[in-house]
Length: 220
Image (cartoon, rainbow, N blue to C red; front, side):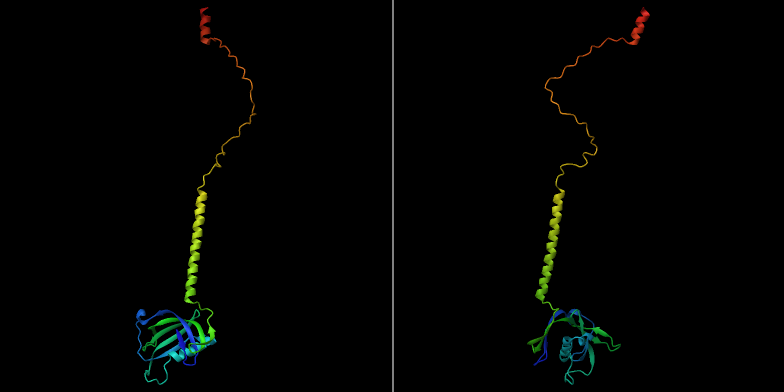
């Protein structure tokens, strides 16, 4: 959106964000057509020179000219311009007659300053917003951030897959097999060239039991 003091300038170029119309908001307030609005500015407009210039442009654009034939002789709504997050927030409020309270009636939008030019819709650049980021660059940053998250997730999946493969490798030797094993005596390895000598079998003697010996002694 452009705002300009025709024909000599200066002019300012904005990116309009977060637009909400009257039909979309569906608020209860209302104001008469042609009534004069009050302009309310944030105190921050006086602290920076480029904000002071924008304030003068807003006054020339949104205020009602004095003694304009179509202007009404009363005031029933307020335009507010607030600076937050390096942007200008616009709100429209109705003034309630009973207690002079404010009710928002819309529309509402946010102005993100791009540049201020010396001429009307052009000319030398007086100020360039260092905090401005074009929509294409913003979308590119979002895509890069999304791609980085996807790459990180893919790396985590690959690491988990490698860990599962390492865990499935067969164990060749159980470390608990030798817990109860007792060491045996080492025997020398000898090679016998001759067959072993057979052992002589001893003849078994017919030994009589004690009862048999007693019976024989009785007989005698």
